[in-house]
Length: 224
Image 1 (cartoon, rainbow, N blue to C red):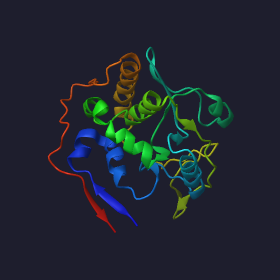
Image 2 (cartoon, rainbow, N blue to C red):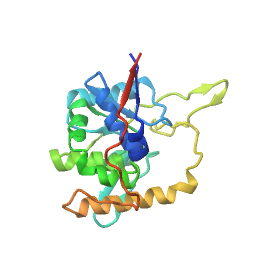
Image 3 (cartoon, helix red, strand yellow):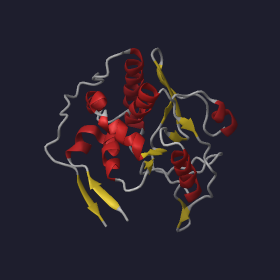
Image 4 (cartoon, one colour):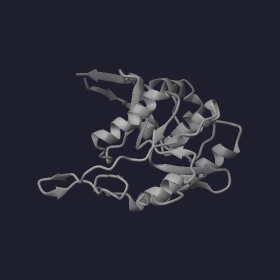
């Protein structure tokens, strides 16, 4: 069964952070968040899903980041060097390919108003930072790193459609629009990390965008 959620104005306001609202409509107990430029194989999906099934309160994935009150948002280590990457310290996992449970996601959504102004001001940039921050603040847990299972190279009509790095990291070969937005993307995340890890107050606005916290359209779902 496939469920398609039309996020309407939620997506306009919260961007990628609206994925957590859409996930409320999932029928199973395990969630796997996946960006449209990630191309995992079945074993990678099953490995992450099994972790969330075993321990529901957690976030499981491969894409590590570090947030702190001084330097903000950092990438420590090189994902293409799996042994060093596995030992690299972190406290945030990106949700571009990560698993969790309906129970944890529902808890985050119940407290979504704590992050709503922040995520609206960035149009969802840093949604995974907020997700990991919630896990740390409410459950006193950090996300769990799971080494990616290596996949084979995928080709369509003789053309590679993904770039497998050493250690099983795989992404579609599509980098359009990345270079001109990269600076602002990371600048916003650095600021978000510093503010979240420094402040006792939850309600912070990172950018200048005036948030509209309650869209006029409701989330609609098509199940087929």
